[in-house]
Image 1 (cartoon, rainbow, N blue to C red):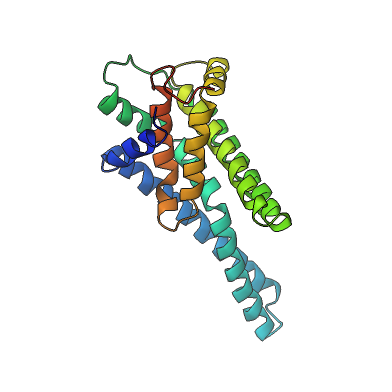
Image 2 (cartoon, rainbow, N blue to C red):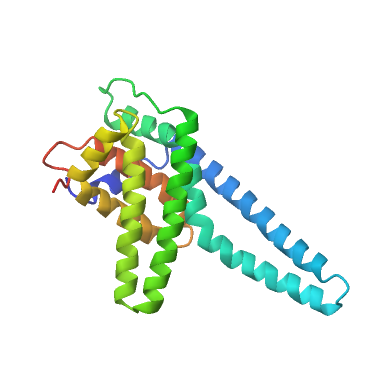
Length: 225
């Protein structure tokens, strides 16, 4: 499999209503979460220093700026969690168009999907922190190492989530090990895309769709190593 084939196919299908619906839901929920976070921080800072005159307004302003920076840092993990809850919708759309001969999938229970999504989001957050630390400690080299670590975390999490629609976790993990090169490549592209404004809104959905193509690639042509 050409490593660029999965994301190119995902992009070609982006006009699909299922894709657009997931993007709208993900962005809306993420925006609402960050709006509530910002409002809470600003209100808390202002209330804590309510009798301190202009200091309260300065604290509220700094709190707003800080929450905006925090929102940018947390966007990918939160969007990944939300998008992971719609894995079935995205995967179904991809399989209907590209793999119509497949038997029906058997999605994991909703509780397990939610748990796996939260775990994936936390993993992405931790990897972002690791990447930031590596970048600060090892300029240049740390940036590359951080990107690789984040690519591994995102790629593995999404691939296993997609694969578990058609197999158990043990089988999904075994298949991941055989296709880790293709999975890492898609995770790397998603990580890079998450750094680009506007494109980061689409990265979780396109990354999930790309993993469906990696899952159904012909054996021996899917980056197996």
